[in-house]
Length: 271
Image 1 (cartoon, rainbow, N blue to C red):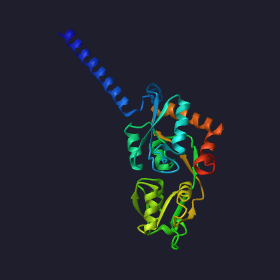
Image 2: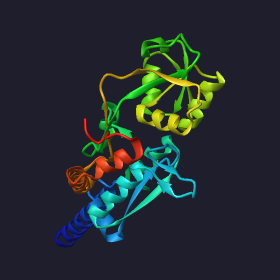
Image 3: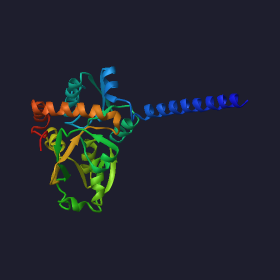
Image 4: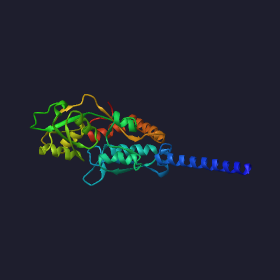
């Protein structure tokens, strides 16, 4: 009896240990913490980038409807360095990170600035661009000349963007919109007092709309670092290292400078 009981107990223990190991393995695969993302990308032959597709000159559609822009071409160049194709999925700004969290995208390439808060949740690649934030008002606005003047005023920006957070930090009431054009339309119509965005994006808008009655009244002193956010964890380590290597090569061979001059009229790929 004792022998049979011991065997039964041993069997139960081994089965329980195997089940626990199996469950543990499933948990690791589910959250992506141990799965090598780079290997998965190379097996599929594509890397999926998320972007807005409505933020010129970063990501937008030209007159023929083709998806173009600085980030679009940088994404394609990085994919080529990885030996795969780039696939772009468009969505609203606040949904890009949700999709990345859920594993629907491999990375986001959309002029994303590195912030302390974002760095707590995501791993960032080497920066591939540097930009200053501009404060824009209508031509007839004389009340706002500095970022500090935003206190008690209304601004418009994308929900969860660096610019919305910055405006709120200066005491502004932020109205949430989806695109740069919408933010400027709200300024021009008087529904808000100001908007914030990348300096180069405003210059591109003014180039396309030279008669727009808006002006830049202030710029941040320091340039922000633009990078590609990835999911945090060991699973993204190899992918981050390969993208860093690709960005370094694209910088050294002049590709980033060429694309920057093409879309921005200046080289924002270097500090």
